[in-house]
Length: 472
Ligand code: BYC
Image (cartoon, rainbow, N blue to C red; front, side):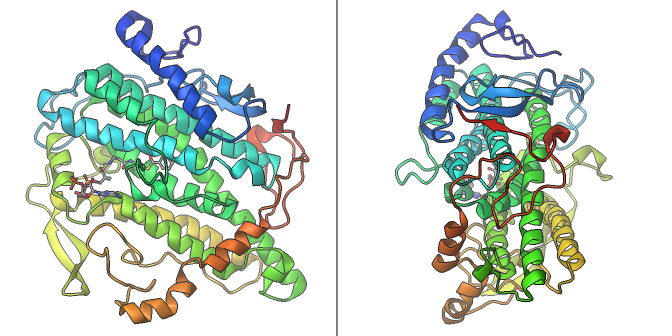
């Protein structure tokens, strides 16, 4: 269904046919805009940014480019088309038609999942609030803003579901989305990774590579939901997510390229003296962002995850393409867990291992980008491999929380950990160094900060010196 842009809130859900819902959302809209002004990209309201906006949810319409002032971005409610034949693909309700409304007994479960998902979206905008001040180019600045407005729209997607299907509770939850803030000691965001700072562009690229990818896997699992409006919302969100991960992957590649260029030119790997980011520091940032993102998948063995699946509210990644009974009542799955202070393999019922299985899918996907980074290093003629640390490294959630484990998966004493921690995770000094590279934003079209290479091509095939952001 085409998106109706004549409405105050653009939508493809025929919002104007439900006056109460429309009014409730129109009431929430100014509060969202206040939040955007106070917590969104700092000092940018007059900028005109070359952004893509969806005009329909099909493949031709969702990437329409033009200059927009961000507070005037048309945030709205866009669901992927409904498949009238769609059935629940797994669990106790397998084969039944999907639900167009929330079954009473699943109300609190679904609300909780939607709130957890929704909470991450404004959180990431808050985390990235100051990055525009130090953008390494107009190209990067535009990508940051594109991601920010789309995360704002993803919040709209979840707020719509809360308002439309969860009555008063849902409206209250929608208010709370704008009250919790990333890193706020009293009212923090729900999940750990969304309370960490994103203070510099290396962190931003790692975040969009690793943490946005958790988004891809969680959204893909929710896109399998028996609650059809949630599934359709997530399907459309996934089309936007791909660009966020692209920004992360290519951002890291471009930093690696620049570092390698300087290593070659000056015949040294001490590129800090040359104003670039050394490979060892990049590995430490990778270790941090990967491990923090692994925590987002929850416990290795989780009865919550088993219940979500059995009830039909959250499936596996690409559930319908998996060749098994989609019930999993007799299936087993091997997980890594901790016992007596050691990392052990344990076979558990597949239903309770669903978080871990999704984490495994995620790890395999993460590894592909790392391979491409290593190819870039190799092409430049260097013998250095970036590596994903062991899944048990630096965890705060799940079986390994509180244990000290090295990137290659050895259990350590506290004293041993303390000796090596600074080689594996960014130290204050590393962070200070990376921060010191983040000079004032590079605003001249076609120019890039010293520590990062230009991209291979422009957004929407624009030339290298395209003015992606006009400052007014
Ligand atoms: N932090 O049985 P478990 C994105 C709690 S990112 C704090 O494993 P379950 C994006 C848990 O709540 C994707 N607490 O839990 C990316 C539970 O509490 P109770 C976001 C945690 O239910 C970049 C207890 O521990 N979407 O979109 O399987 C930019 C037991 O654990 C954490 C989603 O996460 C944690 N990390 O939870 C912008 C999807 N992990 O019941 C956006 C929705 C677990 O004991 N959420 N706990 O009080 C879910 O599917 C699930 O809630 C979880 C796993 C994946 C978080």
